[in-house]
Image 1 (spheres, rainbow, N blue to C red):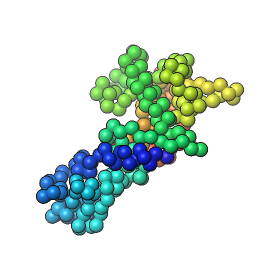
Image 2: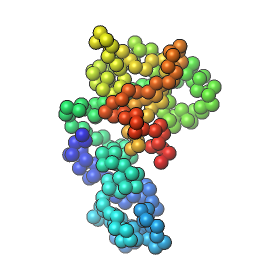
Image 3: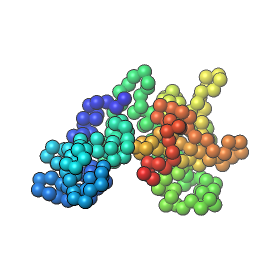
Image 4: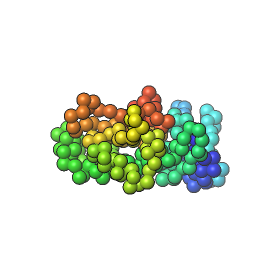
Length: 240
């Protein structure tokens, strides 16, 4: 769960005019801002945003709430997803409570560290770059979609040790798996990587295309508490 105190800190650090203004063209109207309501059809603006009260209200359809409620309604997100969306928009670091379900914040930190490393590795792997060029993937697309490269499993394990990441935490994030004898091994190795995001834009897993002789050309992260395969569509957070 997201720490309630962290949610309150996020609320204090954002301004509803700025949040709504990222989606709609607001015009000053006295002490407030107005525009056509995005939640129903209208010709005369009745959607008001109050910077003093930090709320929005539509006098036409009755829609209203705070910045989090607006993102929920506009983006069709759940409450936690809307919070994470806002945190990503404003580069705010959320804290997560520990419980029987694991530490979400730690798993996300592991995924973000791996993404940085995968992305940096791509420039050092000519075979991976050649593969992408042959598939017509431009440098702009590589950077835009965060495409990377994961080397062999031994280097993955060495990287985890160098960052002092406990292997059970890496397993929770879907980076490593546990073998029959209890040993850990990297799930992805020698693959071009594609970061996968939730509808709210949070990094939740990876897809990988082998550059070796592995019979499975493409594999994704396993099902985790962050990565729900049945509820994800690659690139959806950008397309919508």
